[in-house]
Image 1 (cartoon, rainbow, N blue to C red):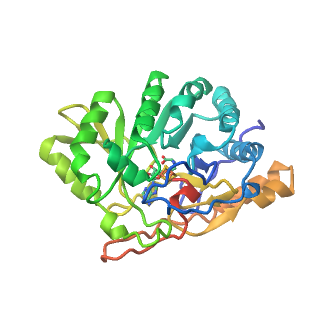
Image 2 (cartoon, rainbow, N blue to C red; image 1 turned 90 degrees about the horizontal axis):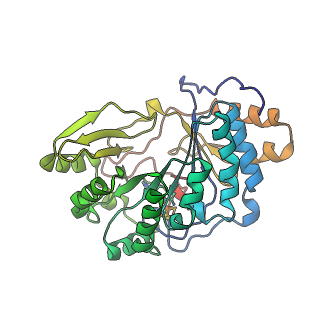
Image 3 (cartoon, rainbow, N blue to C red; image 1 turned 60 degrees about the vertical axis):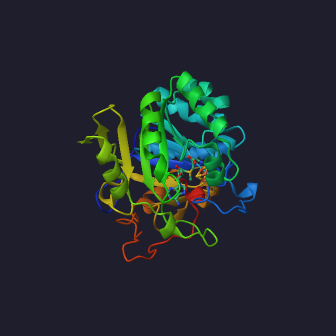
Length: 337
Ligand code: SAM
Ligand code: SF4
């Protein structure tokens, strides 16, 4: 790789160190808050090839990105995806990249965990909203809990640290709060709760009915445990507490109840080469055109810098007036959660 270029700094003086790459919009699940059941996916020709994803990601690393998170759709259902992981592994080996991680629904982890660990992945985020098999099927529509639990066990056996991501769903997993916490404590997994965001038209799904504010979830935790606020900020949106009774670390991602945009250090690349400077805004920059127009990376880097110069201050999600505001039309699986 060429010598490091000047880092990416946005108009609000935030240094962009973190890139999330959605490598596919496809998924083997159809979670109710993320996708409609009859999703239409992009034609394969629209997708960046694995080589193009490599070239683009490498340009970001050259421009100062230190953390890459691979997501989707479900990243592990993309054919030959380990080729891309291996390619990114070279940046870990060279020290240019500090961390290579992924967010997955866990369905394919039993197959891939050992190899991901060998490539240099140290942590995975696995999305899991319930430990009840019937409820799991209801939420994911197509998923099987046993397969995901096997995947999580495989990740742990391969030495990967597992963080569980749970979307807080009103009337759905409220009654499992303590069961999820105790399971994570027993298994040694960090646990982060996420507020449901108004993304994608879900064909009649009532977002406000799904929304369980984490202020309420936290208050319920405080009835059973002593909570100590932790200073840990990973540059990401989560705030953390420790439960004194069992040492469990709990994260809260609260785009609705507490806006965290001022410290945002990330941008998101879709599988078609669109760069979203904010998850909660419609503005994006097309990087596929400059990528394909020239083999000169200077053209690509100029397009990336121009995009970062447009990074907005923050999202406009808001439910506070008892209606959904700031909704974006893209599904989460498009931008990569
Ligand atoms: N398929 C992988 C998975 O489920 O982990 C990666 C992609 S998924 C879009 C990434 C994360 O976004 C998951 O943790 C999922 O629960 C979350 N997510 C999807 N739709 C959401 C929504 N509307 N609001 C909040 N989180 C959402
Ligand atoms: Fe698939 Fe992840 Fe969306 Fe569920 S949340 S449908 S697993 S992309």
